[in-house]
Image 1 (cartoon, protein in one colour):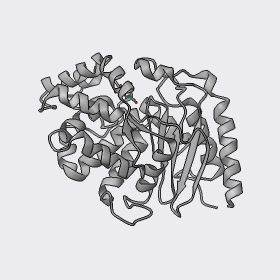
Image 2 (cartoon, rainbow, N blue to C red):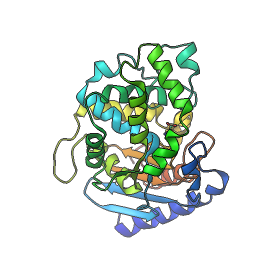
Image 3 (spheres, rainbow, N blue to C red):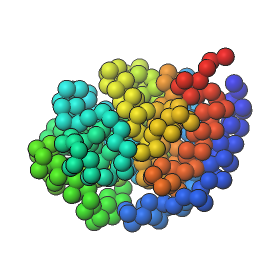
Image 4 (cartoon, rainbow, N blue to C red):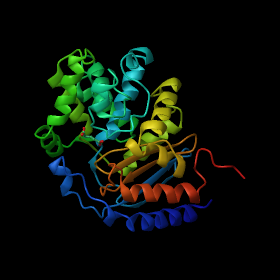
Amino acid sequence: MTDKARGKILEEALLAGSMEVDKGETASYIPELSRADKHDLGICIYTRDGEIYEAGDSQKRFTIQSISKVISLCVALQHCGFDKVFEKIRMEPSGDAFNSLLKLDMTSNYPYNPMINSGALTVVSYLMPIFSFKELLDYAGKLCLDPKIRLDERVYNSEMANSARNRAIAYLLQSKGIIECDVERSLELYVKMCSLSVTARSLAGFGLVLANGGIHPETGERLLDREVVRTVKTIMLTCGMYDGSGEFAVEVGIPSKSGVGGGILSVVDRKMGIGIYGPSLDKKGNSIGGKAMLKYVSEELNLHMFAWEP
Ligand code: GLU
């Protein structure tokens, strides 16, 4: 396919996404996020042969939010190992909202998976004794092929001032012996990771590293082990789009992780990374325009992981 044809598909995807944005709302439980313009929309594709295609607000900065859970999981698997990470965190979709405490307290003593808040707070508690925030920030910059990633202090402060629910989850985890280090410092590190400012292009870069089996696409440096990447992509497919993961897997068929800042990280295995920005969210917390754009692109470029190759 020519560059022109790919560019045209992205413009059409943007149009498909823009028809949806009025049906959603920006996240409001973190006050600073509600200030985003819900009509913003951007998409970036970064292919394995080094081409970048983008449309709309693909270089606008926004906070990574839940997508940081993928970064933390990568780092934890890489440095603490699979057995430690999954000793007290399960690998199952929860079917509940990302910040729910229900099943954690009533039916399971362990977080359902590392993509919901209870699981991610646990993962970050494993990282806290070994990594400083600065080291994790540098890691994020490397994995996203974007050295400009910074902490968005306004969003960080806004979330810390409104973190009763995450604090409750973190203390519940401590009461069950799952978080064993300082709860407040783990919470702070978790919220800092959620407050990294990225672009759709940075997410496409991260998607490409994952699509490329953990190898930096330009330098050839191995950033993550193959097994780490395989685990992370599988969990993104089953648990990455909140309690809308099943429907998204059927309709779009691309392992993805979304965040309430409006970002989506998507990995088309062995082919490309896709990054999305669109802060208008559906009821489950997924970018409403972003989902429409990914569905369009998946169909037009035949990217569904179970698509029949003609
Ligand atoms: N910082 C947000 C929280 O923990 C992230 C939620 C999300 O993006 O799903 O509530």
